[in-house]
Image (cartoon, rainbow, N blue to C red; front, side, top):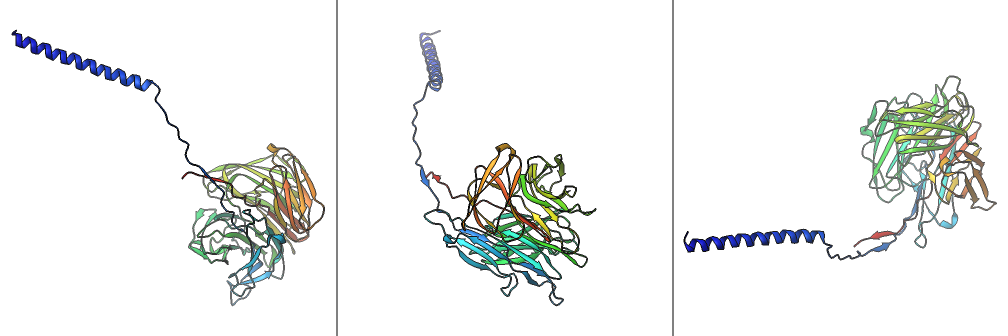
Length: 465
């Protein structure tokens, strides 16, 4: 090998060795850099605490009891069967009263709405409720209901569209812009969206009345889902019944705000064994998927169930009824625990002969803190309070705003208690969350409605610019 070749070989080898050494050094340095702690820089983001201004307190009432098709010339015409007597307060709230028009076209069927502006960036507490008594040859019965805020979604678990039922879905819009409502009906064949329930326009400060039979005819156990866009609406269901030619009662059924896995219905009255007919029942629906529910029934005034809890299967999108007629006459709290979110309601009647009345009972949400409630006029009214077993016993103080001594009610854990109250507005102050409802029971008069807590004041929001 020549000296030139030897020199070239040596030079090339040196380059390869040097390159390999550099590459190895880079790898070692990279690994060491990854393993070594890196310098960090922490900067707290800008945070701005903002408390939204509270909105107006808005309540819409059901309005009068309606009669449908009283004249042969106007089979679909509405007329007023009984006016609604309303209590509301406090007067110091300065609430504005307005009318919800359009039900009958002549102003006689207008419902009442209240709007109270906030004070010092605090929502104004306000409560209202009403009752009506019908006594005519074609429609009788006592009904009572609370005036409630409108909702974007609500559920009506009540009524029927079989022979003898003449039920109405009532949609009220106390807002300043029109609402568009979609009605879905759950029945024995599942859920349907009838054309008569699609794109129903409820004008601002107006009311629409939709016959239930026009949505789904011949259904014994319907459940109506109400979804509103553009503006929330106040939905309710007026139920009336005629047996052969004998009027069998009327009621204005309250809505549910949403499905839940736990339902509590305080103050369900069971007054007769039925004599072979169903005199009381519980209607449940699992809208989404198959579910099972455990039903516990406890007499008002105690904490021991009246019978062993019953477990029933709930097929998806199909209402299911549980007969409660076997219970001894009395007032009960019905508690339901389900494996999936459900909706429900209970029905009871005073009897099946002349002068009978019935009521639909809706679940009562948790009442966690002090708030105002309204007691509608009516005979045999009782405030029924239920306490969950997990939270222990509860003490609830009821103070009439019109003056008078406060009333304190002790409620056993897992039980309920009742207190007779007169019509008016009260401050209800529980020492822990409870479920509360009004229940009315008198000869030929039956009604009930749940008491909802006021919307909580808007809390502070954290804004990250």
